[in-house]
Length: 424
Image (cartoon, rainbow, N blue to C red; front, side, top):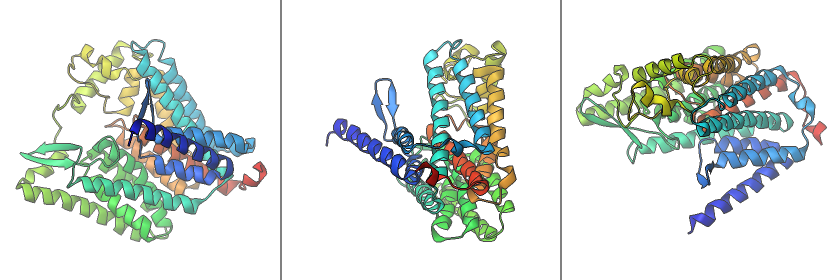
């Protein structure tokens, strides 16, 4: 079958379905965007790459315009606080284009920031107009479980990455994400939300998802991802009442299953040193550098351009100028990356977004599992991105935008009547 015909046809059908969902039943548009977040099916058109999520986003947005969104949809503090933080990040990223040595990466990062902001706005509006928490619960559980199962399957059949510790080569699973750290980032956003849903109502789907995705998280060997996610889930458990104990048992079972998998590899390879991975600095392999090297490079680049930085997306291209030849990657820290690339305006915008992603939910944490999940996921992501840059990847940055939108719209729903009928 000719993929040159099949892929464009699939995208056309997806776009039509997305427009129909946004125009006739926005709840299905929200579910579609949730389900497509960890998948891509890349299609290159010139210098642009289409993905399932991008096409669905544009389609649902177009459908909502047909649906005619009333302005009162957006009259909530949580929405505007997060929207303002997103706008500030777009502006600082776009402002770095003018002085960037390489304009194309800066334009790419600006468009990505716009994509995240549009995704947040579309999901928020659709969920305010036509809410369906039960459908979202099922879709979230099924999607995250699918990602976890695919990742766990890679433990025995074709993991995309490996780590060598003590002479033993151990697979690092990634599922449908670009790599192990990216899978840890996706699950780091998903697991607090799944835990919050599980604590609200303990059922088979959310419990299975919690166990499988936690085990998959451990087997990514992403130290920052595991620690930050444990903190985020702990926040959920502390603030939950109904089924917190059962949720804790399911989460602990997933952790035990993951570490049992690591122990199995240690026994099979006769190398207990596998567990030393958790305390070792990884060596430079494949042009990715170590955390120490990349952090020093980021600080050196920022000192050269302390006010406005070197331009968004330019970090990887500037590494040879600070002595890191043969290395081409990001800074392994959201904060240092944006400091180096966008200077003081960029780091202020970044910290403001991080703060708003947490503070916007503090007043209504017990009112909705979606608000609690967004709050805890943002805390975990803020911690994880001290040692990694996760929202650089659209499958994670977009997924976080969706979770923030679900949380913000849930808060608005408790304070205002649903307004879907007003739109019709």
